[in-house]
Image (cartoon, rainbow, N blue to C red; front, side, top):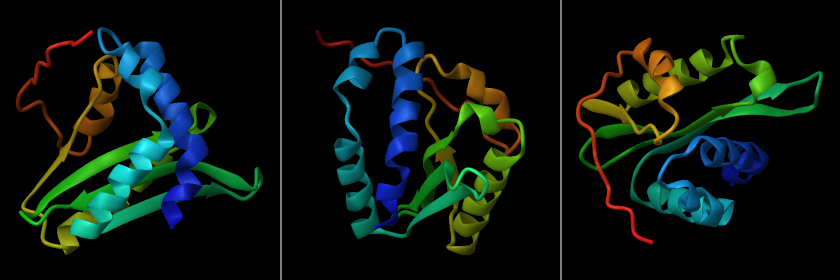
Length: 144
């Protein structure tokens, strides 16, 4: 499955979230790629699922990805997106988002959403470029 190709990038994303997390830092300490992969596999079993990859031929490796899915209720989701820091501001993330959103629209999405982790609010302007705006804030009780 293509999802295994994103493992090293997802690890970097998880490290980024861990470094920037507030109250829920421990979540990222305990979370593994295998946990996330299992979640992605369940998504793929229940509806349309897509992995877009950004490959750098000079480095001979993937430098970014975007995972998107469509629920049975036709809600599209950008489930995970990450671009290595050295490749940001080159339009790679925008290209991946554009592909994912076009795919969701083609497959009948009636609404799209993306969740942003606590501590990653700097990503809001990026998502705003694609029409994503805060709709509600979900507060979660921290369990020790």
